[in-house]
Length: 318
Image (cartoon, rainbow, N blue to C red):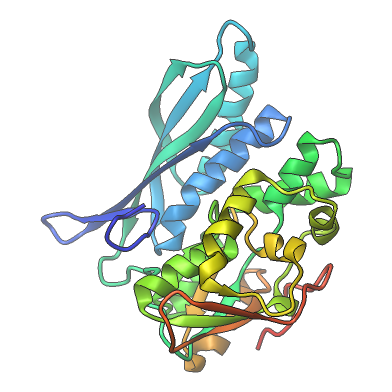
């Protein structure tokens, strides 16, 4: 994370005026299938480049592996999964580094190219901007349900599809529409990342919980207490910055759910909102409009309405 802005990637301008964007991310397994874990970890790492409007070009594998406890053919499947997503992104894996560790971990260090005149920051949100989300929430809760044997095959399938979907098309659309403010939604959850962005932008926001898209069954899992520790930590951190309205605590935890490879949260001025929705639509993405940026105490978020169990991604899109 860039210390100056809270962005998850850093931009370095080269002497000839070109710029590179760099980031790194890795984590322990969140699904049982090693190939899917590799795909998810790669998509998650690449996301930070897309969130700033960059295009990934190279990646380095980062591996920690218990070589005496887990066979190397499992690691090979993890690396194959990562390579498949990196290739889909049009980038190349150029090497990496591995260590022995009791707990397996995998991820990427990613380098991309970015136009220094078109950097999309998380600190450029402005009052009047409309907020659009490009993926449903709930991957953290479903990952916890998988570990507890509480996730259905359909929930697993949809969660993997969501986490392995690249944010490349969404990034192209936001650049085409002229967006200057966005963040990807990952470990701090939707409202955690929004709070960070609003604090840096010296703005506040109102979120309509009714319009926030969820993966199937996520609200019910939260009501049953199937919530990861990271989501509870996010919720505690947000307490002094949130007006939750009438939202129940389990549903508050959904909005604070720690995501893996979540979508982009794009802040768009009123006069560019239609162009953004159209650009996303041409790329097969139906965004959800979930709120508005306002003047007010920096970082403050008010939540209105209640969660719908399975709202449409296109609901409220202009």
